[in-house]
Length: 83
Image (cartoon, rainbow, N blue to C red):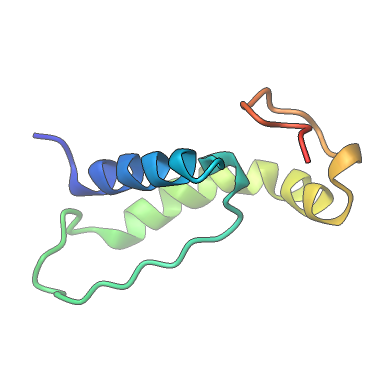
């Protein structure tokens, strides 16, 4: 079974590509849960910890990219360097 979050992100990716953009251009996303009884992950703190552990080492790079994109490290994602 494919997790719902993965399906949602694939749909967002497709919509962005159809609009001429991509996920690499997203700097913030907010998700609202309208039905709290439905949660795939019964341990949200563990999931948040996992996500933070992946993001934290790159945090300074994200800040650099926001302030001065041309001086930020390259990650080799499609569309990088295009304005």
